[in-house]
Amino acid sequence: MKRIVVALIASLALVQGAFAADQAPVPAAANAAAVRDLLDAMNYRSMWKASMDQMSKTLPGIMRQQMEAAIKADSRLTEAKRKDALLKMEAELPKVAEVVSGVLSDPGVMADMENEMIALYSRHFTADELKQIAAYYRTPVGMKSMQLMPQVMAESMAIGQRITGPRIQKAMEQFRKN
Image (cartoon, rainbow, N blue to C red):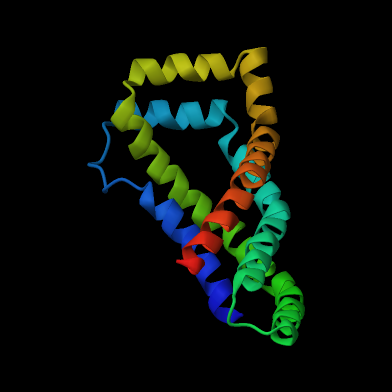
């Protein structure tokens, strides 16, 4: 069971790491200032906290679904061991969710993310473009899009899980048969 939990946590870290770019050179001061202004216009800190709160709420359900599927698909387990594994998973899941939630709410994570966002946005946008984007986020529709983004992202993740979960489970069953 602990191997499954560790594998899930590691996979979350690896998925995030797979998209990480190499460390970029320090952006020009004008770009860094423009990104900070953009992050302010986006209410980045509030949005980050809301996103992490939402993720903390949805993650246990996603983890439960994935761990349940892995346990149920494990042909090496007898029915009794499968039942025990499911009970153990239910007992450990709140603790695992609490650990993950603690990581997601760590203020150091937000500070590191801000620094990385400065580098990321600076790689893709000029200072002038960043100012234009910030101006958009200060409009009513820009503010609305930022306000609703955590909810939209959470619903998008749930839709993705609903669509891909059964397909991944079916593919894993096929894989185990071969």
